[in-house]
Image 1: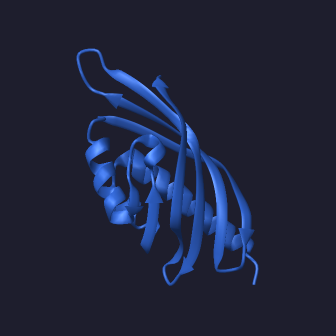
Image 2: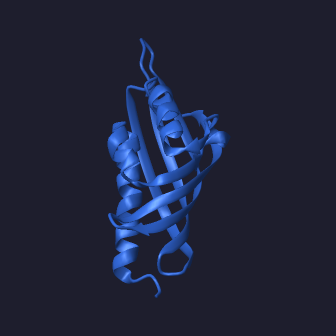
Length: 138
């Protein structure tokens, strides 16, 4: 069974919900985009590689530094599928602000390589690898 157009729409929706969860720092919504046993690798951004719960703890602590965040995911390409799993690549860009008398803005950009799985709740990210390409003042 190949991935259908409806599957592609659902996967795209998960990617958008992930980006909005990051921007909103809504860690429950972020967690809902992942499978129960998901693994995440944020090491190129100075983060952790491990379970979704370990990644969530790191994100909560790290992202608390910023009072404003914006997150965008795009150019999603489905590279392979078997009907119940899918491998994707996508680009991301984030803008973050560190508050202060003179706020500091940072821009991060890179790409994700994901493995999605079809679950009883729908498509979810089972494995995410983030390759940060740069972090610079915005």
